[in-house]
Length: 384
Image 1 (cartoon, helix red, strand yellow):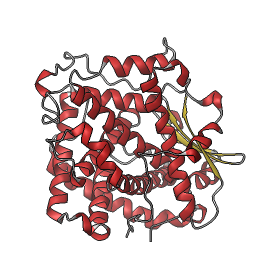
Image 2 (cartoon, one colour):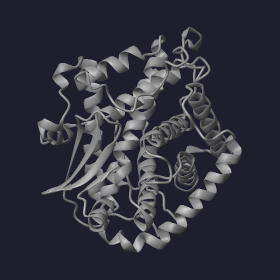
Image 3 (spheres, one colour):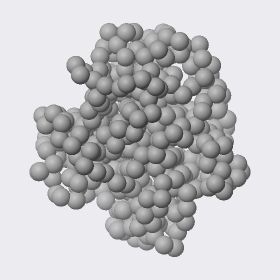
Image 4 (cartoon, one colour):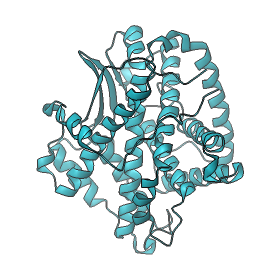
């Protein structure tokens, strides 16, 4: 049984001097050139790196054994991906520059669909991209400087309505934070060090080239690691959603007339995670290194429900309310995904969710069978 991580509260909406100092230690050659980007865009992208450092500082305080330094950076890479790796004096957690950009592009295009989150802003003013023009890029164009590609992709795909554009930014922030927390979890749970022992690689790459795909027991272990990292990451993000400062961040995007209660924020969080899972499945075929997107979604959704009902009863949500909200967000995201004409293998939501829960149960059994191989490397391991 997984115990909800109610031991951590990341203040993602507030960064201080310690975070700024940590950012200054990152190797400049690997960082985006923020000086060449518009001030509002550079500030927003810089904040993603700051959040990783904030999470690292909080986790270090509750780890079971001393943790080495973990450096975080938005790396100048064009492909959709991330990594966590062992370095000479600790670890590095890196999000490729393309990752938040492609997520932002995806949410921009979803919010250009009038039927998607139709209560936000003036949905009727939106005009979707013409048929064939909605392909989601999985890497930044090579003909442009990375910083220019980021500016171009995010501004040209922007929804017409300001409120819907602001919502795309907020959802992108949630999805990117989930990715950052996921990579930190690989370090904390011992996956990076165990991977070095199993594969002789000091770097745990999130998106693996097809020719480098692991096989057999290593592949099964890798899927379990992704499952575990998802559960830790969603608990960290859940603490964000229940933070008093979350309401301050959500109200401007949702507007005073729309619900931005904890349940609405949790739906946004789960929808953001599902988009991440769907995008990764476009890069890496499911079941090779990562579980199927809906299996991952049900795992984090059920963990969120358990955490809310067992450890956050003061929020005042019933089991029925939480699970209805889970089904609603899955339906909305998958409907929008289909309207973007992105290939998907989930024609029936309810039957797919039932199969996904069976997939989660298999991962739980595999984790129990495999965890002795790697759990000794963990700085914190909250699983039985």
